Length: 418
Image (tube, rainbow, N blue to C red; front, side):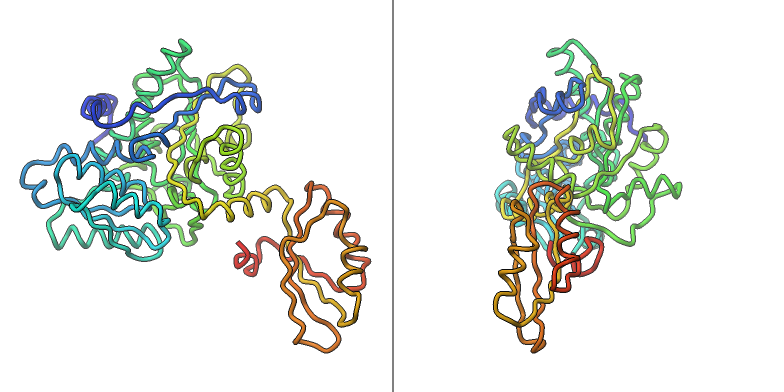
């Protein structure tokens, strides 16, 4: 079933009294950074703190009586599950939500709270695709209706209501249609839905999809001419860590001519912190992707009207230590070294006095003295005040007595530090 603007508008009518009309806010920070007039579509303020409820409710609301009695089942990294749980509670439909182990506890708790007694949460595998396989098997054996997170025309049409809503709001606030809409991409449901509506109603609007660099399944699909399975997947951007683009979303994206870019996970972290510290927005990694790419991989012209979709705000506060760490590494301010200290008094003091600069800070020191009588290795983490301080630090290390080996961010050892 092709998705068109009429389907999106029908979904909008269906959702009118169910979902929150989330705010469209001008971002002074991003406008100053790019020279454009930048607005944020705040789907993190949605009733389930993400746009996913739009697609979930639109699909479940169209089920017949027998299908409703049999219940629904879904796979989710967290946000879609919350949308399904909320829709089930509103419509009185029993449901089961399969989530991977990587789903933050905060999202699991929210699924339970939103769904109540009628919705069960089941943990399956380590990735979204493991959970998707479990949900598919569940539907096949129980007769429940599978509610895809992105790969169904009804889901796609529901997600596309974000585009229709933001254009209406921007016309009311600024009297303009967006020149550019920047959309985060996981499996492609939000992007496909926005494209389906915009290409008919406002074909002059440039649409850019942003994928995480470690989970760019839509880019891989476009390169291959069909959805393909990613062999390696970085699950940090959990709301967009999808191994294979959808069969329903792929043709809509491929036929549209929309741009597709990637953004590094570290850059996402720096934007999450900027949104929190400067804008008071608590965005999850996927929610910060569109803004993170703006002015970097997504270049806009001064004076253009740009809308970035903040897709979700279900971020577990316990993850912020990792977010800060990844941001510092991305900015070139956090580095790790293996230092062979001589086993003699004053070795550490000389290292501090002769190697570290006045603004350098040791943030990690793990010292193992047992390995050798003459030397003892230490893993040392150093935070710099400025990225350009690295070259002088490396020069001092080169001339210092201890042997020093830098831990490259691409090495397997580095993965244990983050």
